[in-house]
Image (tube, rainbow, N blue to C red; front, side, top):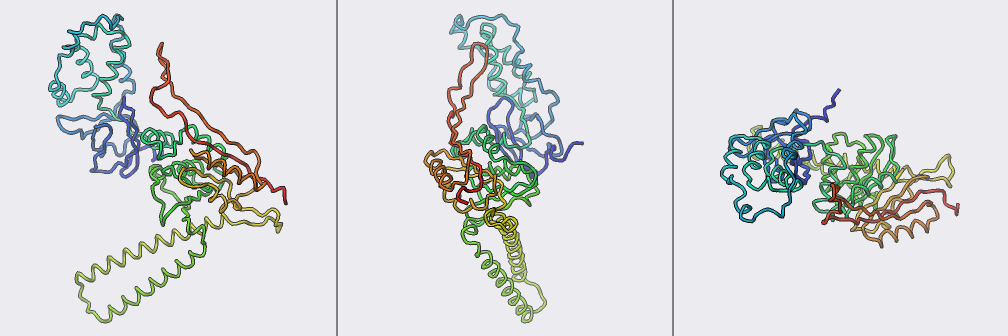
Length: 443
C-alpha cells in the first residue's frame, strides 16, 4: 500500500530540479503560488495528489502553468543519442564561414514553436536539422550539443520527496559556508559515529548547519526517542532543513534555549509571570463587562482579537516549557541502584557541529548527562576548536577510542577518454572528533 507521504500535497515541501539542470531547490508548494526553478515558472496546483516524479510544463504561449505527468523515464536519453549513428569526423575540419550561419532557426521561430506546445524532443530535433554544421561535428561534439539544447529548452521538472541527501546537496552546492562546509559523506560519518538506532535513543544536538543535522537525527530516530535541540533566542530559527522534512509528529523534537540550560529556574519565573498576565487580563475583562453595555462595537472586536492572540501565545509558551522540562530531565544525572559511582544521565549521544562557537563551552554543560558507552561527536571546519575539545575530553579520563579525522573528497567526471576531476569544486571539509564514554579511572 502506497503511503500518503508518497504523494505531493498542498503546503508540503518538495525538492525541485529541472531535468538536465544542476540546481536543487527546496520549495514549499502552495496552491495559487508559483514555483520557480532555473527560470522555469509553473503553478503546482495540478500536481497535488499525484506521486512524486517527472512532470512536463506546457506553456501554450503564456507563462508555464499546466503540469502533466511524464510517463516515459528514458526520453532524455533517447534525445542525447538521436544522432549517434552519424559518421564521426574531426571538428578541426569545420569551416569558419559555415559556423557563422550554422543555425537557420531564429529565436522568434523557437518561441513560436514553444507557444504551439511543441515537445522538447521535437524542438531539439528541429534545432539539429537546422544546424548546417551538425553533420561535420565529432561524435562527442554532437552529444554535447544535444545535451546543451535539451537542458536549455527542457520543460520537464522533477518533483522529489525531501530527504537528507537532497537537502545536503542543495545547500552545499548553493553556499557551503552556511553548512560549515559539511559534505554528504561527512554527514553520513557523523550519524554513524553517533550510533543512532530507532529504539528510544536520546540525542543532544547543537549545530549551525541550517538544521541539517537535527533533521538527520530525527529521521534516524523514526519518532522514537528524543532529539534535544539547543538553540539561541526564544524559538529555533534558521532551521529550514527540519521544516523541509515535513515531519508532522514532532513530539520527540525538544527545543531547549541556551538561557534555560544555564538557568533552569527561569522556567518557574516564566510560568509565574504568565499566570499573573492571565489573572490580570481576567480582572480587566470582568470590570469592563460590568461597566459597558451589551452592545458590541469595534473596540470590543479588537479586544477579542487581542485576547485570542494572547491566549495563543501563552499556549505556545506552555508547550515550550513542557518540552524544556523533558529535555532538562534527560540531561540530569541519576544514580543506578543507589550507587553514586554509576550516576549517569539518559543521553545516548552528543552531536556538536558549527564554526561560530567553541564546543568546549557546550560540552561542559551537558557532558555529565551522557550515559556510559554514549558517544560524543564534534564537527568543525576550524582545527583549533577540535583540538580544544580533544584536550577537554582527554582531561576527564572518561573517554576512549578518541579519533580526529579529516575527510577528503574529489568528484571526477567519468567518460571515455575524458575522465578527470571537476575543475570547480570544494574538496576539503571540516574535522570530526569522536569518542566513547566509559567509567572514569579516578572512580
